[in-house]
Amino acid sequence: MIVFQRNQIDKTTYHKKYFRPSCFPALNLRFDTWEFFAPYYDKAYDQFQIPAELAKTPEDTLLNYFSILREAANLLGRHCGSVGQGTSPFPIAYNFLSKAYQKKLSYEQYVHSFAGIGHTSLIKLCRVPDDSGGIRFFYEIETIEGFEGQKAEYFGYYYGFIQLIHEQGGYRISDISKIVEDFLCAPYHGWDHDGENVVDIKFGEWCKLIQQRYQTITNGYIKNICFRGHNGADYCIIFFTLTNGTDVEIAQFRKAGSQSWIQIHIKPEEDCLGLKRE
Image 1 (cartoon, rainbow, N blue to C red):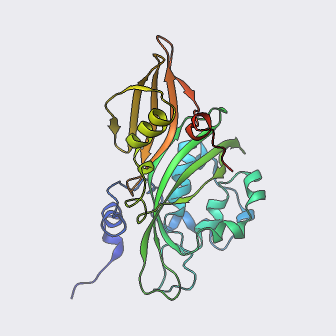
Image 2 (image 1 turned 30 degrees about the vertical axis):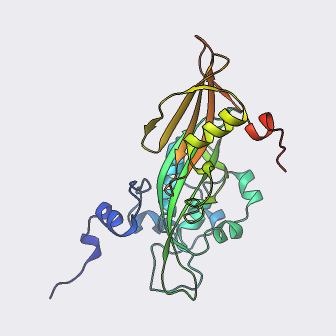
Image 3 (image 1 turned 180 degrees about the vertical axis):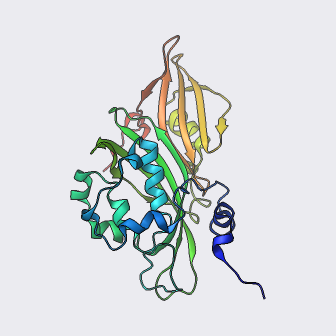
């Protein structure tokens, strides 16, 4: 008889085989043992502070934050035995939020934001420009979700932006957005899911700005679409490609002559079509 012992399985292989339909490797694999969570077991979020070494840099903060949330489960009545670390990671993760953000988002609201989620993989993380001089990251996660009354789980994909500040001797999350990805309507509707079409239509047809669009430069999920303007300046629009294939605009840059690239903010709907967003 073969005795199955999970602790003999290589953790990296295990996560890739069972939790990873996306082709991107999971980034949040820093804490794989119960020993990390043990000191916080059965403690409320306001009964401890996270160690300073977990928040030394913005990247450390985010990788550790998502590593803690990796096996956090809030399945809302969907039972198949124990899942991951259950709810024990939530109080730890909540301490990665800034004090001001915690005042806006209560602990109960925070836990509810993970309703139905039983596993989280961080698959994309990249620092992006911030005109205000702050610290801003793009992220994408892949989740396994299930709800009461359903007999199957499914994969969900979300992306958004995270702001960080330096607080309490380390970096804390001061804001985080979470946008669900669409896998059904995107393939059927709209040019605005494709970066090249977005640039051609918004900056070309609407703004009459493009003299010549250069060949797209792609590096992994980062897509640089650049063009020469009728005014002689060069422009570069940065997109990130999501798991569902949609290109999300991240930043715009302009370079005139021998000058350096500067970040700009052209809003084609408003600046070129005169349409005001509500």
